[in-house]
Amino acid sequence: MADKDNKLPENVPGTFYVDDQCIDCDACRETAPDFFTRNDDKGYSFVHAQPKDDADVELCREALEGCPVEAIGEDGEE
Image (cartoon, rainbow, N blue to C red; front, side, top):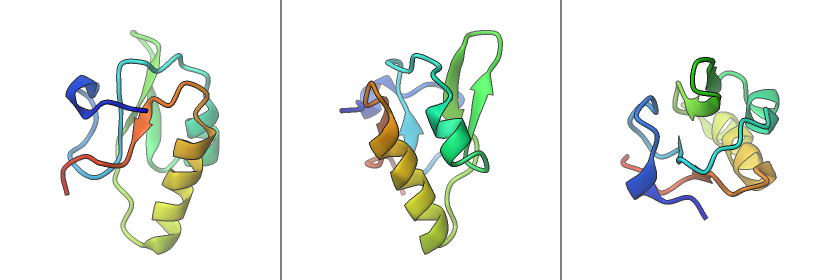
């Protein structure tokens, strides 16, 4: 389970975030590219945009559920 105390600094504020357990597998970026992107220098993903509607939230939840190391959280700040 992702830990909001270990959120990566690039995450934009909001409900979804990526923590420091990310292994840069690309799953979230393939599932929800409008919301997840990559830090090329450090080799991990982070949330660059928060979902705005129910369809967007579902894509982010799909990315969360597909994360092999559970590095995506949904309990960040609203």
